[in-house]
Image 1 (cartoon, rainbow, N blue to C red):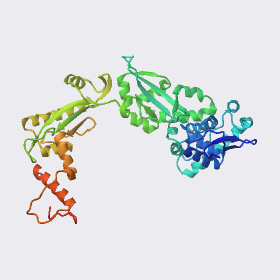
Image 2 (cartoon, rainbow, N blue to C red):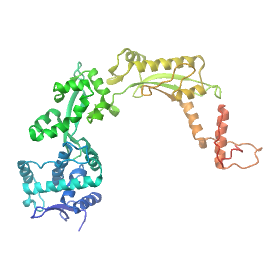
Image 3 (cartoon, one colour):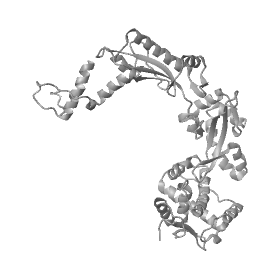
Image 4 (cartoon, one colour):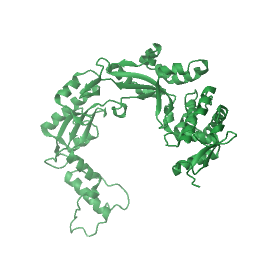
Length: 456
């Protein structure tokens, strides 16, 4: 019998097994192996594997049904207090009415006629026992244990602060909505609900602990964010809000604080790495070969301001520098602006550009610029590399590449006066020294044995 054709079977005594069946859909060998090993430990371990770790796998209807049942258990764990600890309470089984509905919704499977609320309640308890055992075996906190089974569980039972663009509203072009995740879909995607729904879902004294656990990260963040504290006090956190660019910037600046408190932050999808693009002052040195050689060779220097690699026009640059700090709409995109840092970088590089136009930059000065150091007293050192940077132009980049990888240089003949045959590594050393000699740059050979320093 094909060991990869597996199907769940419910015995007359309500025990859930996973057995080979010729009528079952064939599973991928790796998946079949994982499920077989888990169910060999008992129904609770098998269901836990299905509901926690195999989220997103394509399964036949019967296995998918049991995965959905077990995933309810795991979602319940995620929404309980103490999920960050090494121990967490086992969530209560669904109410009798829900269990009855679940038992009637089961797809066709062997033993389906034995399925009833009591059987589901017993299996829920077995999942709880298996969870406690495997958590203890792992020796890690609950959240880390669940994340190991499937990283997507790290999002369930947590509050998300969502920022979105709303181009149709000129006065408030951003929208804010707080949501929370209740479960994962069969495709391992977090299912979101507005945070206001939590007040209704967790209504009543029996669910007070779950509500407090859900809102705890928000309370932590509100202790350090005055604007969030005002929203919480006014109960605005439970409703969608229209935000101005200033509101969005304030939120953007406090993202590290929110995340450290345990709130998940979601930015507009077109913002790379969760931030709007920034204009960048980019300087290029050594685009063309200098007229002379050595450290006194004069290299060209140029500066431009780019946005996502595209050069901005002088008019757009003036517009950027005229704006106050915050978010500005440039070329149909929201752009983050720090006017002070941007203006300082432009001023510094313009000074270097002025010096270069008078006589060019030496090779040594170019190296200092690439390292982010000051140049000839021009105060051109740029501390904030997120807003400005210096890049080597084509000629300088090729020269630096040759210095780092001399094995690619043309072979150099040391002449007939050398009465020996160079080994391969010595030939590479000669090429490197020859390039340095042409650049009139000094060399230092490491004090180690076997390098052939005497010959070189």
